[in-house]
Amino acid sequence: MKPFVMIIAAWFGLGIGADGSRPISLMAQELDQATFLELHNQLNASPEAPWRTIPWKISLLEAQQEAAQSGKPIFIWAMDGHPLGCT
Image (cartoon, rainbow, N blue to C red):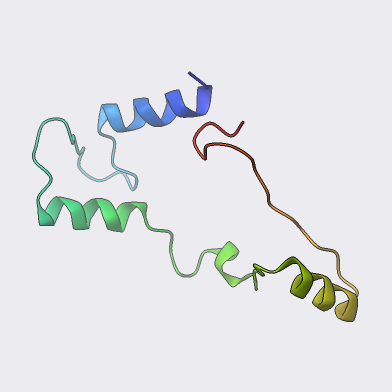
C-alpha cells in the first residue's frame, strides 16, 4: 500500500476528527443523518480557501487564449490512473 493511502486509512481507522473535535469512529456506530452532516462539514473545504479563488479553466484552448492575452503562464494539473493510487 502506498504511504498516502496508509496515512488516510490510519486517520479514519483511529477516528480522529479533522478539526480536533470529538473522535468519530465509523466502525463503532451506524451512519445516521447527524453523523453524516458532521463528517460532511469536517471534510468540506472552506469557501474562503485560497485555491477556490483561482479562475480554473476546464478547456485548454480557452486557457491558452486567456494566457496569451494576459501574458501569464498556464498551470496544468493532470494525472493518470486511479485518484487514490496516483499512478
